[in-house]
Image 1 (cartoon, each protein chain N blue to C red):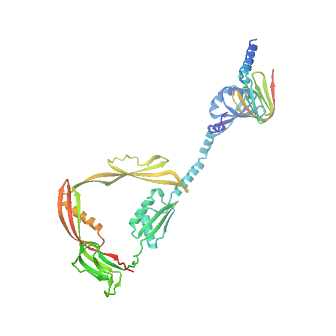
Image 2 (image 1 turned 90 degrees about the vertical axis):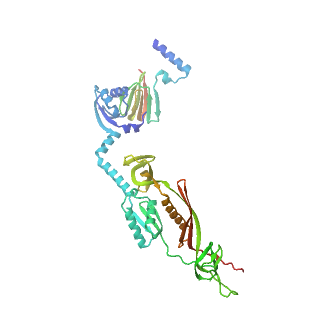
Image 3 (image 1 turned 45 degrees about the horizontal axis):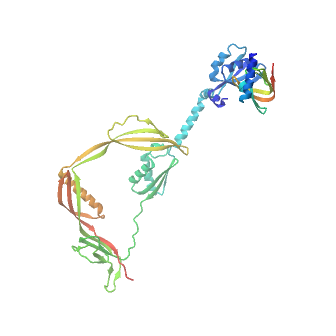
Length: 395
Length: 94
């Protein structure tokens, strides 16, 4: 016996047979392999039964010369349902429009909340967001993702120390930490100031304590510069020595600069492709052009689409192909030397404490071989060499 | 006479080989589920069908089913499934 469901899907017709010899008609149809079901007596001399839509043709042939009067009453099942649906396509269109609307609305930005910011900062943030296009009513997956927004905000607004960006449903939440005012002074414990490294003293500025060195003195590493014990040597008072002792110090560094260097740089040309990804399959929807660049780097971004509160397994993807170009930089020896000196200075400045000054620079040695220029450099630097050393009182 | 011999041979086979009778002897196999359904295999065509009566041709004779509110759920060349309230099942031998 066949499944009634498949009958329903493929469609069937209710037939009325009227007249004498209805049984013979049924026998004839059954012999010709026309499946019939739900046979019922309606009135005297008339029966009702169902036949498949696909058997309709055979049915006509089978009953052509019978004594009965046959009439098709109504069609049921899939194809007829579909026909009716088309007839009432307004409903279908309305339903689709409704789904689309809900889909669009659930992918919109509906709110921007900024927490923990002063009104001025909040205004700045909102202005910056407007510039980026993060506004109420925008479609989420066309905007930058949360990480990008976070990065842009922190770099563009100097008043921010940190900003947390979170997309909850249709609302962007911004958690702001602003830069603090200058910290309070730390209370110092009794200490001496000693030399951090060997130097020739160039300037002494003592706030508190007893200066032990004079200008042009040569000091070694760890030598006492400003003593924390003041007053009568017999009955000293221990304080936290404070001040600055500037000394001239020396540094040596080796710098190497190749004469020709290969770089790989982006030249600004790019090709952005848009995809819709369903499960594992990416379907291109925009920009079908093939990327013709010889060298390029690909950057992918993936944004989930939402429906109400659910994230669909459908993603909006963009692939950005950026063209790369190889550039060769050539230096003459002279240029290489000046570059090397610049680099050496920069590297040194990174090592030195703030406010230090490079006062002298000498090239000790210079060689150029294997397409490289090697420099041995000597620097004279004025820097604060004083560093605290706690006084441990024996008690 | 020949037919009689055939009949006898079949009877013999049935007894000796333990095969089901309906297969060998072309008899109808009738399955009933309470009074609700009756399922007949091996029929030879419909003779009468009304609300209260179903008459089927068999190889030998007829099968008459009486009851009320009959409807044929399905009919195939050799099978028929009848639904309704079945009260009597008669074998009519000519």
